[in-house]
Image 1 (cartoon, protein in one colour):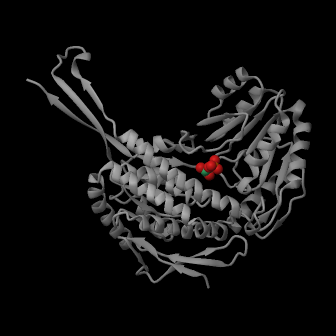
Image 2 (tube, rainbow, N blue to C red):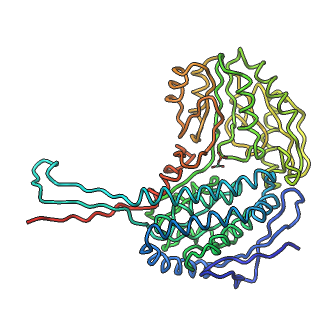
Image 3 (cartoon, rainbow, N blue to C red):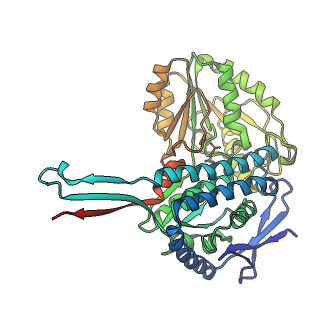
Length: 478
Ligand code: G3H
């Protein structure tokens, strides 16, 4: 039961010597859809070794040639969008249309990395010594950016392809090699994507994709001495990784509890449309989803009515039918979401719709009159459940937002740009969107979280910079 996939190492597709596999359960049917190799620590060692060797010659490959290969991979990826999108539908229940969009966006991201890389890395700096007190003009400093070595990329289940290439593209253009550890759900989509890099003709060993159980190879990979940089997107695991990792650059994007602050003068139709898009697309399984609405009391009734009307129009069902709301990724995720809903019920939240669940499918739910003593006020459901907290003042909203242990993004709706700017300054998050829902894209924008939401900044330019090191040569004149 379930088609078996090999892992990719040293330019070849291989079966693990463990003889074991990991099952990927389709969230919709709740049956095994695919199986991937349960790789061993020995296989991880081999992958690290080949990645190290391949990187050395890749770093010497001219930048324009590296860019050319990335453009080729981008084109091939777009040509292969159908099988990749199908895997996304079956593994993570992403609505069919969104699955295709993810692949196309990923192709664009790779091309953009190639273009940005040739510009950014084609330049260095030239400094002279006599600007610093006490120095004559006897030292010339030349700088350039050099690769870090082997980059370990760990993307999450919700954008397995896009958040893999957002690490692969910058790493490769900058002259690094890359080891990809895909999430179990999303692994087959990643393997199909890696196949596109193989078809583009990247040297063997430069990119590999190792699958397996986190419990067996997770720590082994992240603590491996051969890893020179980790780029991780996901949940709490990221906190554990950053505590255990060695002295290497880390890029972490973890959870969020993105707040949507709504002022009295806001365009409520615009707000409602953004709450639907921000809160319910991919059934709320986005780190940047709107996860709490903080609305000024005087406009709360009217906003809740508008959102309710739009929630009623959301289609609920299988991803193959392109429904808006599809089953959440796993039964344990559905159980966790249900736990938050039951807690809110017990503590007296107002249910704008009836709570309904079938298997992993949870109907969209808006919870009004949520109070800070409810878990849903603080925790991320990663599902189609959205709390509304009514606030008496903007300060109260900012206070709630800043009391969170997360600080990814937030948004504010008002027609007063001065107020919006002041609120943006006051919100302790990596990004604040004015009059739109939080979002990572466009993919060249900086993307970062503070507090438990992450380390470092992503976005194409920042990721390329982060995956390089400055190297200086100083010419000393007599
Ligand atoms: O889940 C986390 C993603 O980085 C969010 O990306 O804003 O494009 O949905 P998105």
